[in-house]
Image (tube, rainbow, N blue to C red; front, top):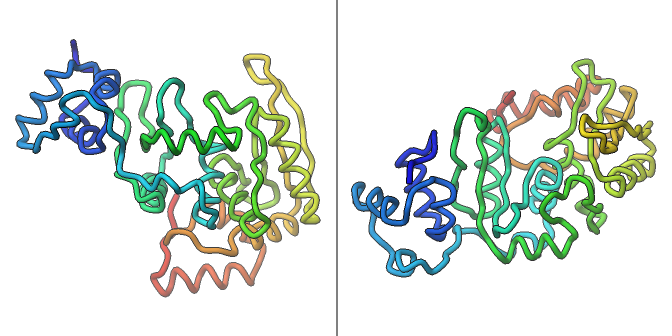
Length: 278
């Protein structure tokens, strides 16, 4: 079997160390079980008897991550719903982000091995791969399945963690204009979009929802927050808890009309507690 383009020995070793079953490794790399073992042996990696016999193993990961509410869990869940994937016929979830620092933070929060998907001519964005049957089952229980973009519901989020969840939604798939006057989140799910709009309205933000057609003819929904006062208020709400040690451009754009928030961000950067990315 020919090796797929962009698949390096290092990538194969990372998959092996993540305890991925040989069958799935073969699908990802294009190599046979024997060819995979040859790569492992060539680099002197200790062979695992259970794994070499074909018995499935998993990534190292906190399998109860989505069972215990925390601000970190809520943020990752928001990212997954908007910018992640639950894979069909595999107990795998993945996150794609241009900024690898975000992927490393997700892996750290989930106590997961840092395993990236393969790169190729049409796949250039870094993608974090996490394998866990239990995690996928837990997500399914929340209504989050493969091909979720058109049908995902708005999860039952405890009030304490709702702002951080919406931060994850915006960090994942939100758009903020350079001037800091508008923000929108795009979704193919009417249920999710109308619930998000209701929350923005309950927070006394100037919000509306617009239905459009995608290139494939499916309806898509844009949930807007408009006006610098509403954008500043939204930033105050969703960034009240610090996660990670970096500040994204979306947060900077949303905060630019608030002297209070800017002073706080400048303090964090000056004290070298945070870095600005993007």
